[in-house]
Amino acid sequence: MTISASDVIPLSQAGANFSELAEDVKGGAEKLITKNGEAYIAIIDAKRLDYYHQLERERIHLLLINEASKGLDDVAAGRTQDARAALSAIKKRRASR
Image 1 (cartoon, one colour):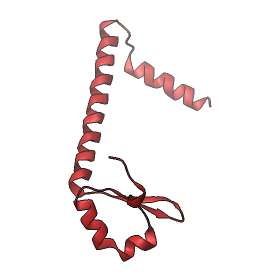
Image 2: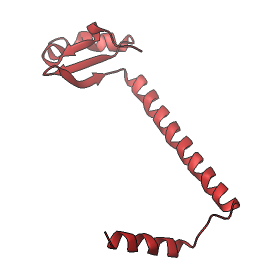
Image 3: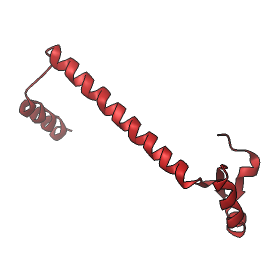
């Protein structure tokens, strides 16, 4: 969804017209509230916010699956090392910084 100029509202005006803004948002609009001429907060419908959170969780799950797949590929290719030795090497590198 694109935000038009009418969806950008100064904070002082938002407070005075909050009920109207809430109705617009409930009707599908998204509002960008500015403070001192810069983006400050956004107002979106609660269901849309839930949807955005669901998308973010799904993205995180896909990233984790991708990383697990890479790990399995490494194991299959023999690119492994002892965990204690790897942690010890990391600690030594950190200590030498």
